[in-house]
Image 1 (cartoon, rainbow, N blue to C red):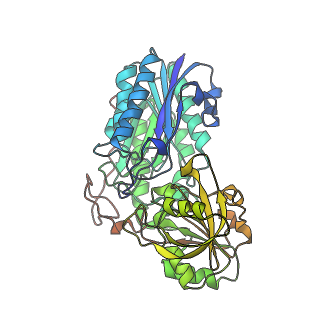
Image 2 (cartoon, rainbow, N blue to C red):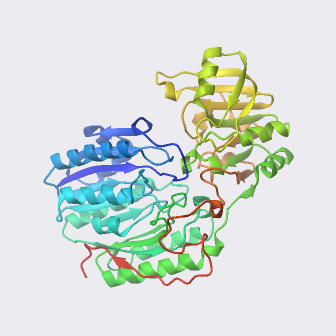
Image 3 (tube, rainbow, N blue to C red):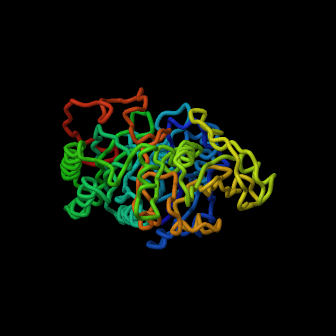
Length: 477
């Protein structure tokens, strides 16, 4: 069996003014892909694997059209060179947005179908925060999405997709049925660790066990993309089309019925309220998650309002990681460790925010041959702040310790995040999510919504919904 592998994996907020370009992505080409642990799932089956092109980046703004077209051309060329093919596995995210383009995943996946032909089996794995369209569904034979948020089941999802691919290659040809759900909510209100998402996702293994159903998937969608396909969806893969339709409609109805029950599974507050609560806490470290500027959700990562509030309230023993500000990092490197310098911090990428200005002491410089990877640690009164030359998260303990910082020893830790990562969550005593402004604002109703295809909750209320499952064009009755 000849099976190609590829994909384009990122998440794009249409409200983020900073375009993604080629240099922002990690790109793997050809045989380089097979040696990566991310593709260890391929070891589950013997085949002649033909790696093509794979690129990924943390969430951010739209992809520059030139960058997307360059990536797509390279992928299509590698895919064409690999012909003939029996199968194709696509590792996708599902929330691409390309400037001046409608439905970027639909373009990528349908282009792949045009190359490989109608007889090739195409399987895709997705993030549950991905958005779908009929164009995407019509080009696929197999689909599976993550079942956890925070995402701790990525290998398991890849395994389901690849196992179904090889099951199809063995002779059983599945189809896909999906039921769009006119609801789209932030991931922080739909975490699978909290109800009602926890119970909804707990249904999926039992649906998988139904005769004729291979996989049950549930997407919550990506709310910070103002585009027609941004909704939740129930998606079924299998061979019994009536069973797939019934299961998709039942799951879609359950999600719709629970729409008012989704909530944040942690303490929340405004910037002022959250900082005040952290200072009043008898336990520590308090971990403040600045949700409106979360780079892994599509935030810019350069807002300084939380820093300003910490200083205004006289907070001490604070570790804040971090704020993206390349000019500030460059100024720190020019001054050197130990220097006391005036600095403007924040608002270098997003003109909609306000910088903090004052005097800092340069504590640590973390150099790198690539200037965009440099970091600087500065102290401002009682706050130790990490500055990064480019957008990035600080969601792993190693991100702190690599800079000589111990978050467990701090009284307050601040990260730009939504729900906390699996590494930071156990540290938080307690966690507090700051409902701050930004391009990934948790109060999504405050965001402009111009491109809805249908009435969609929570932007619209008081409308009726009856699930209607739709088969793929490739699904056999």
